[in-house]
Amino acid sequence: MYTSTQKLAAEFLGTFALVFFGAGAICADQFLHGAGDLGLLGVALAHGLALAIMISALGHISGGHFNPAVTVGYWVTRRQNTIDVILYWIAQLAGAIAAAFLLRVLIPEDTWRAVALGTPQFARDFPRWAGMALEATATFFLVLTVFATTLDDRGTFRSIAGFGVGLMYALGVIVAGPFTGGALNPARAFGPALAATHWANHGVFWVGPLAGGFAAALLYDFLYLKRAEA
Image 1 (cartoon, rainbow, N blue to C red):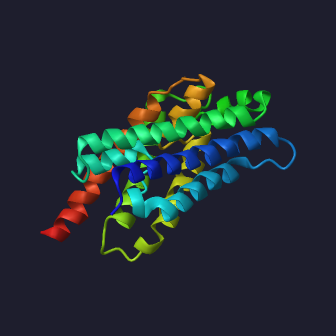
Image 2 (cartoon, rainbow, N blue to C red):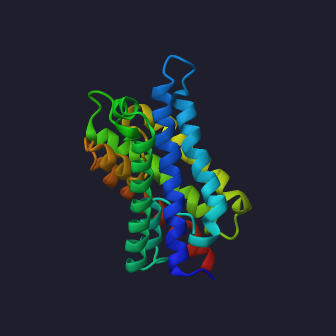
């Protein structure tokens, strides 16, 4: 049994890794532009692999949330109390902030400023309502995958849950990335936004993912987990 401190440290480290490698890949893509750049697929894989590896490495300690949208799903289904949710959010946001500021120190300023340190950004003239819906939908399937692979004991995919969740995150970035930046995670948006002081459309990256995670958790819990317990 792990202590609260150990769980919060795991959430800090997992979110740190997601932001460091995810936002770092966007900065690297900018640096390499015109010389074998990573492109959308490379950026999506960086996010997905970071999440998959961290869930595999630390998921048994804290549950491997690394995302306030996942944590809110645990809260709405009463798997975590309000105090623990707040503490998880603090750890996740702290990890995201630390990773973003480390990138700011390490990466050349002209490179990270060109991409706002990997802060998710809207495509030109893309409406906020559509961005919110896109973030919510992608996060819905991300949290649905988390619940199906990490909470449902009947699932045969549980042993490789990190792989499944990481792939879903990568898919979300591939689809949402060109339009919203593909955050699917308020902490992923918040850390770089704070370090780069780039807050355009920032509310979308809270409302959309939290709504999607809230709905996915309720649906899976009601449709599958509660019925299995009955």
